[in-house]
Length: 172
Image (cartoon, rainbow, N blue to C red; front, side, top):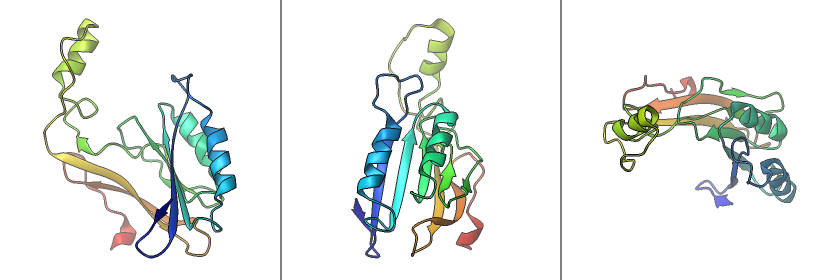
């Protein structure tokens, strides 16, 4: 739980998906427990769920699972911003993957030679090193209704670096 600078309270959850990572606990059960303990509009003015996983299907499922009970469900992990940002039927903002903040002239933020070599040789030759080029900041801007905590506007944010810059229209 975070106290915001405007006096509100925001609950931020990070859960990890299980596609390709079977040993993890059920993220849906974990989110259900937290939402039951800290309901939107009662104990929290805003709720953000970061769904960190490989599969967009699992991220989308979490979006629908929390729709109307969270302000935002946003996917992370694949490092590539998707273009499916929207407000779901019951008012939760959603995006399958926000993308990374880092150098996009890279392999998911790492200098290209070692990851590429591992794909070509199937043998590590060294350790991954961060790419050091211009960083692109990727994010999602969400406005919420003060009374409900649900999303009213959503738009992608990409600044700097090599990807096309995008600023939400409602920032103007």
